[in-house]
Amino acid sequence: MMSRRILLAALLALGSLSATAANRPAGYTTICTEGKTCSVATNTSVAYGRADQFTYRTLSGSFVCGEVTFGAGSKVAGGTNECSIPSGATSSSSSAASSAASSSSSAPASSASSSRASSSAVSSASSSAAPSSSSSSASSGTATLNQVDGFAAIPAFGLATTTGGAGGRAVKVSTLADLKAATDSNEKLIILINGVIDLNGMVPLRSDKTVVGLPGARLVNGGFEIYKRQNIIIRNVFFQGAPDDTLKINQNTHHVWVDHCSFSDGDVYPDGKEHDGLFDITRQTSYITVSYSHFKNHSKTMLIGHSDGASTDTGYLKTSIHHNWFQTDQRHPRVRFGEVHVYNNFYDGNALYGIASTMEADVVVEGNYFRNVLHPAYVGYAESAPGDLVQRNNMLENSGTIPTRGSAFDPASYYSYTVENPAGIPPKVMANAGVDRIDPWQAAGVAPF
Image (cartoon, rainbow, N blue to C red):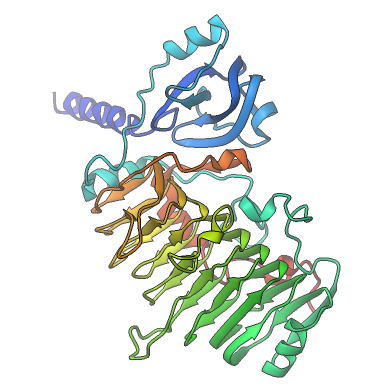
């Protein structure tokens, strides 16, 4: 009798866990299933996948619901993948597809922002879902590196993508003088940082550069200022203790990829010093991706948009932020005017808030995991008027709700991407974000010397 009760309890628990993963995003409706032909109206956001793992594309007309449309690796193993569109959008799928969709047994995912999730509920969901991989994600080792993705990867302003110093000469720098000579050069360069360098303030960084930190490398007491530049890659660099900003990207700069970096005030926080933000993206800068980076021991983390009066930033500041680990107080990011896509990040005990959309910014927040964050997001903040914020498929552990406003924008109209199950984001991000998670020589694209 006892064994039957245990078996019944296990089956009920399994059913409860499986219900946490949906085959369509919250607010979406299935239009057809794997292998069927769907048809949608012009420029419709379509999600493809299952079990809370989705690839998004903006499509029109007829298409096949499968990898042939959404790209190799987009199919999620373990069951039938579905194609879905925002509820209220129009489609004219085949009757067979409609029948298959209507017979699907998966329940729509509930909005994670409807109420504060309990720790025990989220812990159960986490144990039932292992993190999935995507074509753009880093492995837990050093053999495979993710490629530039998001806004930094798409054609704009005369560039096809972001390549940094690829094809240029590789130089290893160990002193501030050598670093400045390389970063201030107009030559296409791959700059390898060796050891600890005291920057003593902001160092200019010119176009067509790849900057990679070698094992143990660290830039302290300063950062890079990128002013009216383009085509820059910064990877595996540890920035620590900058009195102003560690990265200041401004004045019409475009195509910058920051990946696998660490940003911190240092091991002691607060240390009694008055530091500004870690990362600023301002003044008509655009096409930026920040991925797999670790932010810790700081207050003001990432500002996108200079001020409430900088309305000329409207239509710019296009930024993708994914797979980052935020252990800082606020601004992850704070956005004015720009279009910002925030997905699959781990918000870990942020003392003040997670994300703020202000001054008619367009912010899409999806597939993130918030743990011990009283205010995961704000719509409007302090003296700044509200912006738009769309949220879907986020997980909240001992955290507040996510407010929404307006329709923001559709990231899939710019690029294809995969949203992973947020339940697996904390372990994946903690294992992969920050420095020393990738092979620096491989990241630089050169042989060790």
